[in-house]
Image: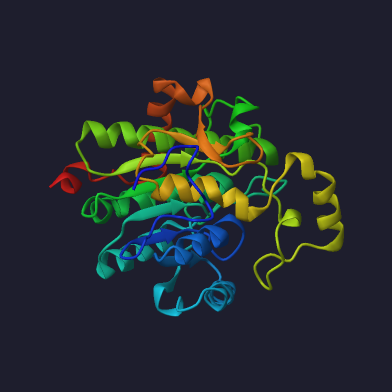
Length: 317
């Protein structure tokens, strides 16, 4: 089934029975609502998160709202800031077999005021938002290739507003919370586009796409116990911004379309039609991110930070 921008209905997805998707950071926010939409369309979803209690609560809420979903949703502990956790989770998924898509969603949205590093020695925001996903996608490349699958990286509209060239991706100098967030999204988007170029060049049957949710806020999103519980003040403040914001449910639309729509092509960026809100449509990456030299530099930096080279040759076989 193929769908144009005009006839794609995010509330009525194609039948996804028989397909398996892994969603990182699926115990809350965009990850939860993406998982919910995939399950409602019949997909088998592997929900991942780093907190077992929150992950179990999110699964319980999701399956309670979707009839007969209990057998189609499983959970897996995964902390994208921890490369050991990434390797363990990837090994588990490889043992379980089929995988049609990866939604690389997990991330730090509100970075710490002061620079922090992980146990692997990487800057926390970069590690969580980009490096862990780079390692996970590489570790699962052959599994995805066996199903001619797709990976979707979570970008941000902020990358079109602030041009932070990641010459120092670890932000050893000049750290600020905002720069850490935006720069991690520059890295993530560059990785998603460069991954597709390398996959094509290596003739690996996997596509790589980037999607962003616009300006999606918790205060515009329905309350779900343990998943989305904004304070009264937070909901009031978010509702004041209603003309330029949308819910997390709607923010998940571009992510899900990028993951499951057969008409979406590798190397594309998808986001809301009005940038901050709206139905999903194809968008254009910032000029900095389209620079091949930047993409090459980012890719090498991530290889070095994760000590991982993607197995292109093995995945092609």
